[in-house]
Length: 76
Ligand SMILES: [Zn+2]
Image 1 (cartoon, rainbow, N blue to C red):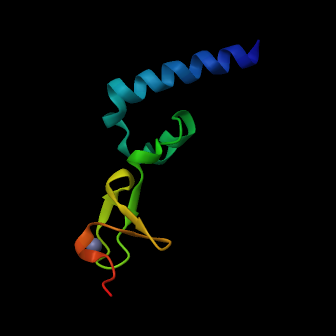
Image 2: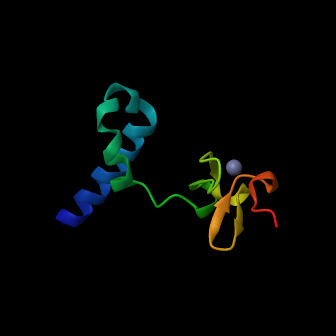
């Protein structure tokens, strides 16, 4: 009973976030409560060399660290 109301409330809240989320920008931190974990490809990772943040799926994972491009890969 209450769980069902919570689910409905969650859906309405999600719709509210999509439609009118800009009204309360200070509650942005709550978004993760109602949203799924971001897909791995959308996660930002920091380049180990130049500290640029790049989308994980476009980053280069090399020897345990992420790099933004081949130019930042450690050269031998
Ligand atoms: Zn870099």
